[in-house]
Length: 148
Figure (cartoon, rainbow, N blue to C red):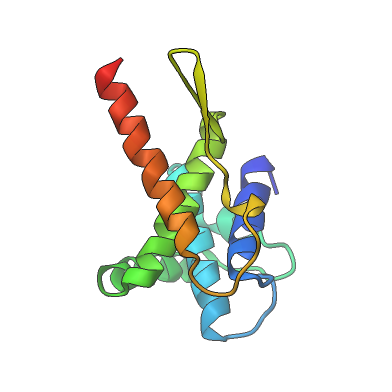
């Protein structure tokens, strides 16, 4: 696993409060794996599907399984708003990590901090504070980009 894989893995596992390497078919494990593969595909679009499947070392997925997970998540995101919010939160955190500015924006010598998911106390299910902080961070970032 490279650094991006490890960060996405830890973020997804922390959010769902599970380990996605377990070979169970429970819904929360499968949804977490789907989000894991989709976020990896968003972060590294030229990466092969089989290498994404092999990134979880104890459970090896072939390219067809990874492609199925990604397509199923695309379908579910249109109907399930809670899953869509969860996916967007995790994707935003991972994109900020990959850009190299995971938690700070500097505007006019004032530093605004964004607290990522791993620093918020773990709770089962959807955490409204996370989505509010991601929303606030996005709107502030848009405001700064248009007014500086």
